[in-house]
Every structure is written in C-alpha cells, then in structure tokens.
Image (cartoon, rainbow, N blue to C red; front, side, top):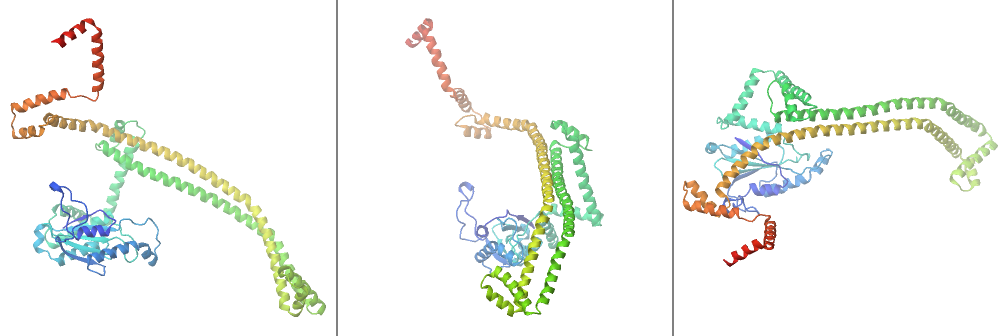
Length: 529
C-alpha cells in the first residue's frame, strides 16, 4: 500500500473531470497531452462511491461540494464560529491509494472502499464530503479520493499537516502487516527500528526527554558555533571558528544552515524581548498614573462632600417648609405660584392656569419641586466634574507625555534592531555567495569539458548528425575528415559581429596603398595579371 497526496487545488469541477474520465490523448511523438476539455469517455473508471453526500452520481457530488465550499462563512455563522482569518482558496484535496500488482487477484471493491474510508479517518476527514474513484488503467490497483476540505458541519477548513501525513504513512504500514503482504520493506524496516527503540525505552516520558535533550544539545552546539563564528569577516574564518567549537568536522553548508537557524531564533527572541519590554513600560506608566488618579479622586470626594451635604440638607429643609405651608390656604397658594414658575420656565403656557392646576393638585406641586431639585443636583454635579477634570488634566498630560517617550524609545530600539539584524543576514547571504563561488569553478569545469566534447563532434557542420552516427558505429572515413576540414575552414572565415569594422580597416589600408606610388604600381600589375 502506497499513497500519494496531490497538490491542493481550487476547482472541484476540474478535479472530478480528470479523475472520472479518461486521460487526454498524448501529443505528437509521445509529447504532452493536448489541451482542451477532457474526453467524455470513462473506460478507465472501474467504480465510484461517495461519502457524506446524498447522491452517488459524481456530477451531482461535484455541485454539492462546490456549494458547501462557497457557503463556508454561512456554515461558520450557523455553528457559532467567528468567520475570522483569510478565506480559504484551495478547498480541493486529492490523494491516491495504490496496491502492488501482485495483490490485484485478492482485492475487491469492498476491500478498496474500506481502505479508502479508513484513510479518511486517519486524516481526520471522516465527516467531510468525499468521492472515491477506482481506476483500472494500470497494472497496480488504485483508487483516488477527492475530498472537500470545508466541513459541511461548521464550515472550517481541514489542515493536512505533516503529523497527519506521518499518521497516514504509519497506517499504510500497519495495513500491509494486517494483510500479511509487506510490499514496502524499507518502510517496514523504518517502523521496526522505531518499535525496537520503543521496546528498549518503554517509558514515553524518557523517550521525550531524550529527544528534547538531543534537540537541546544540537541547538547548543549550533549556538556555540554561531557565537564562535560571529564577528569574523570571511567564511573561512567562520568555518575555522565553528569547527573549533564542534566535536566533529562540519561542512560549510552545514555551518551556515546552523548559523542561519540560530540567528533566526535569536532574532525572534530579540523581537519578543523588545515588544515585551515596551509592553512592560506602558503597563508601568499606566499603573503609576492610575494610582495618582485614584488619589485625586479620593481628594475630590473629600472636598466635595460638604457641598453635596449642603445640597441634600437644603432639599430636606425645603420639604419640611412645604409641609408646613400646605396646612394653610395662603401657604398652598404660595407653593402653587412657586411650582407654576418652575413649570412655566420648562414648559411655557398660561401662568394663571398653571397656578390653578397646582393649587388643586398636590402631586403636580411636588412633581415641580422634584424637577427643580434634580436640576440643582445636575448643575452641582457638572460644576464639580469640571473642577475634577481640571485636577486630572495634568495627570493625563503627564501620562500621554511618558507614553510618547516610551513609544519614541521603542521606535529607536526597533530601528536599531532592524538595522543590526539586516547586517547579520547580509553577512550570512554573503557567506552563501562565497560557498557558491567556491563550488562554481568545479561545476563550470565539468560543464565546459562536457560542452567541449560535444563541440568536437558537432562543431558547426551541417552533417553533424551523420558524423555522430558514424562515431557511434565506430566508422571514421576520409570523407568525414574532409568535411571536417572544409567546415573548420568555413568556421575560421565566418564573419564575426565586428565584420563591418574589419571592412572599414581594409578600405583605409587600400586607400593608403593607393597613395604610395610603389604599392600603386604593384596593385596595377596585379590587376593586369
């Protein structure tokens, strides 16, 4: 059992058209297949099957999977999941399961379907929509599984990460062992070594600690090499420094990879420390000013307490005075006039009518006095709040100033960190270029030698293909040598890109010869001959 996971795609329609139909015809002379729509025939398809789709027809399943992927945000909303993050662009997952040709006689549809469904479970896709397509165009039986990564339950996108791929690989090994036919011995040997180590160290905590210790040792060694190589100006010096800090020889590429990894981790920690320091400074400033604000509020409460006491005392005295005046007609009339003034100020209307209504209704009189008391309380509160704002303004200004200073220091430290890290990465890039330059001459010599050998056979001759056939047959005749000499002579006299300059020089030389009487006479004699 072998599996192969294809690249994730965007189009369910294109994937289903490919897997549920025959391949396009190959191009001329066995080249790439011609473009255009897929053939309508499906002779290579043995059978199809769907999972979590209310139809067994592939064309209907395609439309259902497309609709599910398009409704991902709506499904998230219905499931109570926030539709955050970037919208997924590649919901199509396709992978294949292939059996060895020797297993063809012992396989049936039920077994292949069971294996495909089990593989979906291993990948955590057992509740996702999927189409299983079995092909019969090869000697080895195989099925293709096309899966919708968007969950039909909550709209979330399934992630096929390396741990899941490793789990599928382990499942394939166990599947072969269960069937009693191990056709992938190298994979089986790998997991046998893992099992042997697990038997040797049965405690999982000990194994995890051992793995962590080895990783820490490698990281420490890389850090030591990085520290030893820091500050040098060339790769050779960096290599010497790193080799001196290592127990065994390391290649230049290995040293650079380790230095790059250590530098990347150190840079990440530096950024974490920078942001953490800035956040701590802001928290400290906010805490200090919060304490000052609390002190000011307490002082303001103490200072305003007498004023509020006087306000409430005046309201109580006024209430007692109104109760005394309510006992007589003159007092009631006076209260009615006072209440009418308050109501006329707020509502307007006939003053006499308001006086008459208030004289008749005690509730109207008390309501007017309650509104007046509330207005006095509001005015007092607003005045005291303005005074409090004036006392808090210096604290707010100081907090803003200190926050601005902290931000400015953060920006300066950030700029310095960016510049320093960029310089370190520049040194690493230059080191990689130096490695490439050191390896380039060797590769160049190999390429030049190979091209030189080819040129010796095919140099400029129109009959190079015939000469090559003669060389391959071991034939070397005089005619071939003659063609070689003629072609070589033609190559020697072949005009170059600077032929126009050569012609100008020849014309200038001939003009000088014509001015010379002796050379002009020789030239005339040559023409007569």
